[in-house]
Figure 1 (cartoon, rainbow, N blue to C red):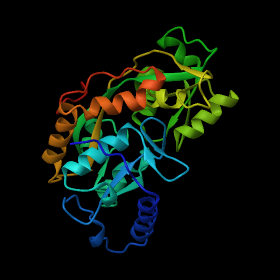
Figure 2: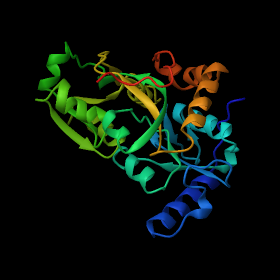
Figure 3: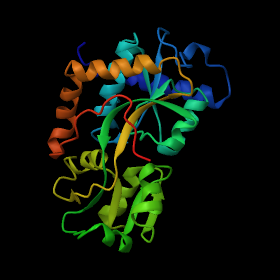
Length: 281
């Protein structure tokens, strides 16, 4: 199957309408929610502010590796691109979006963890990333121990924030914002020393034309993050989504998406992980 990447402003506007309906507590039986394929549309949670992975452009398109993965999976489930509604899925809200039935699935740099698997199902993984630091181009991080003396920023509810506080640098000063874009502002104006999250996300920010030459990856592999496709608990689509990811890899569409979205930053992701792989306890 050819990789399809088209989303439209109309789809975004439709997503806003559906969100408003959901907030009002009304029934969404016509939205296709509930995880079943073959309906009128499929609602997929993605990020809107992660260059390289999930970015809403000024002209209303969604672009990035996660967007391509989501579009491919939807195609395998029987949905044309114009039947996909992309809804923003901030990190702290992902489990709530799935449990409320606001989205059918989430493809949004969603790291698989035992804690999350208690409330959601994960298909995949479809990408292996590593937590790292994004620092100003003239900033040095000599080793992992030095992180304890730094002021960091990450996103509330993210695995990266939890890793810093629990394992990597419990003495570091950690600011938590709703989006990575807010952290990037602090990095630019010098109020924080580093933005920490997965290297795939950091590479996307570093590769933006307005940021090229300003920042760099520290090059520390602080963790293994297996990105999965979040599904409602006990979803009937789990096997079908796994099969779609497998097909994307086998048919070469996965490699094409990696080259298109990560190549400009010089970031070389790991090979596609095997379906069912989970982080070590």
